[in-house]
Length: 143
Length: 159
Image 1 (cartoon, rainbow over the protein chains, first blue to last red):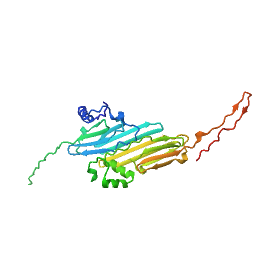
Image 2 (image 1 turned 180 degrees about the vertical axis):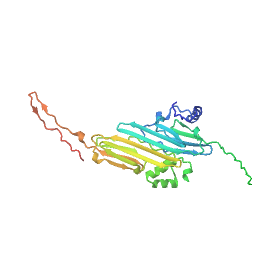
Image 3 (image 1 turned 30 degrees about the vertical axis):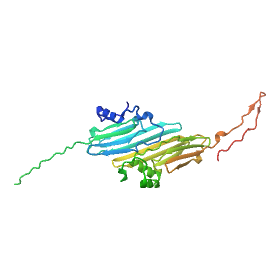
Image 4 (image 1 turned 30 degrees about the horizontal axis):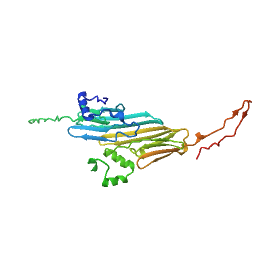
């Protein structure tokens, strides 16, 4: 099954994640999508930011996976979709672009993404574990 | 705030009354930002008949000031650009639609309107120039031409 694969992700973890969200759906969403529609796919965006993870969900059902691009530049997460096609009477192009600044406590080495068969793009990143430590206080006697 | 409540259908009560008072771009804009609203499908967007050429586009995701309609020769271009800052960064979207108008469109009378549901309609009447009929000379076997009168009059383009 064709799915967008994240270069940041371990494939075994991603496969398990995909199994959970795709269930028993037979065909990927772009096989059945009405590509003549004039919807915009970035309108539905949900962000979850809690103590264990940061996640983004987008409806990209009117873009094929090859129309999409995800980049991580430092803490800047960029999601882009561009779709162009000829039509009977002319030409059609639509695009969206989202930039999300990830919080400082996100583990940038573990960002992963997946697209469900319904065309939901999900990007997840766990938070870093708490690494604070106590610092001893030294007293220096003054003479 | 109401935006923190789960949304499972059309707004009711006070929120619904408030929504009805707003123009489509403010209403739809707030809906798109806060709820999983589905933008309706756009079907049958081009109508090309003997009387007119008509384009319908759903532009509800854009404010009128974010839209632009250009006509260059017979090429009609409609563009929308929308950008908004968000809590975590920014979000942009855009579209370009280009239509090559038929040759018999009356370019001087193209009309564009957006209704309050956010549907843009671009109407252009036809000139009627394709209905011109002219007579052709008939050459007889004797070698000289006999010209007949036209069987119908030529219609003028305007109105």
